[in-house]
Image 1 (cartoon, rainbow, N blue to C red):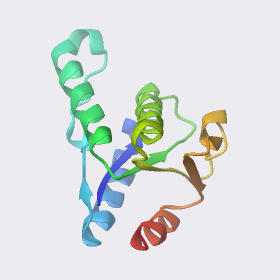
Image 2: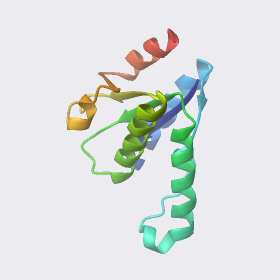
Image 3: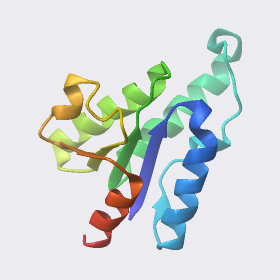
Length: 131
């Protein structure tokens, strides 16, 4: 399966560890934002911001599974990615959407019927292993 993992840029190390586990299980990463350079402020890096935004939305558009790792860090990007995944699921029944971790009830949108809230990445891996 093709999987997209959304999280704060500060969670890059954690996401890379998740990627490794997913790849070991035979899954592919549909969009790897961890390879992006830090480009804030975006106004000073407009071309890269444009390129990265296109790559990330395409990664979401082409994934079978979308995983959001919310946290206490305010990061707008991961929530836009989450919104794109929810809309994509409503329109085409894909991707399957997971919100993972202790912050999985911090938004009204995490309770949308198309979203599965779980406590750990292990729960996601067990579920997608059955698909």
